[in-house]
Length: 164
Image 1 (tube, one colour):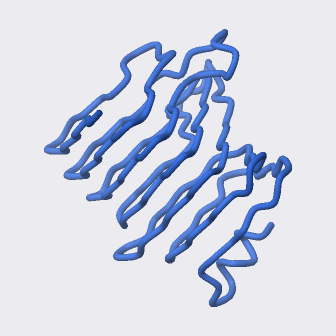
Image 2 (cartoon, helix red, strand yellow; image 1 turned 180 degrees about the horizontal axis):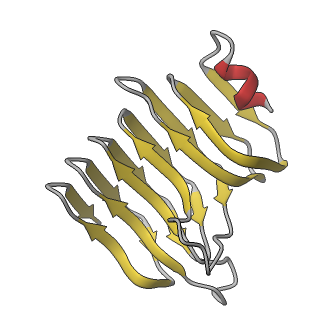
């Protein structure tokens, strides 16, 4: 609700208090956004960031989406289509789907995050990160685990750097 209201206004910052927030459908963000979660902030649902030239940061937030195993479409937790995104100290959990998907020349920096399937390890993600179509991604000091297809998939002139 806060992010949808944000899209209609000039706000740029959202503080998420501890608790679980559920998104129905896909939450689409099309401008600069900075989200900081207090410890215990958890958001369940799909995101699409289509920020042509905008910058987005998400810090200290647990993001989760349960992909539908038999779906004919890609089940993506966080889809970044253009723009620049910083993910810091977050958990991206997407059992049955793709934790992070960047395309359309997106630029993504992942720092100190966990990208995986379910929290208990019982259900793997398809992949932690998919980077396509001239996008760039730097993953630093993060854990990529519990994946069925691959931890990182890179294609179509994309670039990924994995750093300790």
